[in-house]
Length: 250
Image 1 (tube, one colour):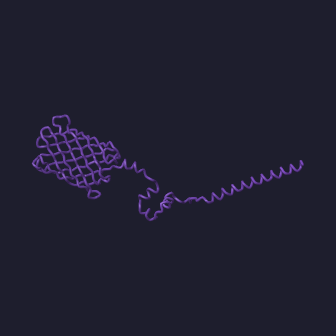
Image 2: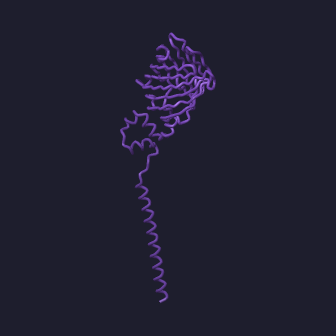
């Protein structure tokens, strides 16, 4: 009986070992089959080509679209670009002017608006205006520092500069300080509205307040029609100017 029992136990042990070996082989084979079934990307396949396949686009469309090519290579930070890309543009101005309070005297205004100083929110503006047959003349330059992101449709900037104003009643010159509000109706410079209020030689007896409203509308990618109205408030006299003309956007 002892030999029989030992034989049975030996047979059972061998059977268990055999089953364990068969199960191990099965797991190994299953892993190999599963690995072979997984699709692998070719070493030469670029992320752009995989994206082209995933969105199922005609390669000719991608070749003719620089925007799609940039997006396929790397998705840009659109929000950051919008915030840093100015919503208004530099403008060269030439306007014909009328002075209603000076017997409708006529004149001309030439200037430049919002020349960007590097990539900072600081811009420079300068202008010169004169009447043809009256002792009316004004010139000066201002710095504007925009406090909101340049890509904003609405922006605000303090004004600091110098202005010389000559009228039939006298002359004022000195520091020009104030504030400017710009409403960009189009990020391409196609249309905008600018309202500014400043004071020349503030605190002096010859102080002059300047209120200016300007509007511009583009007729081509670089050319705009522009109009503005300016009110001059001086202690001895109030004057005004109305202008219409063209602006060139480089």
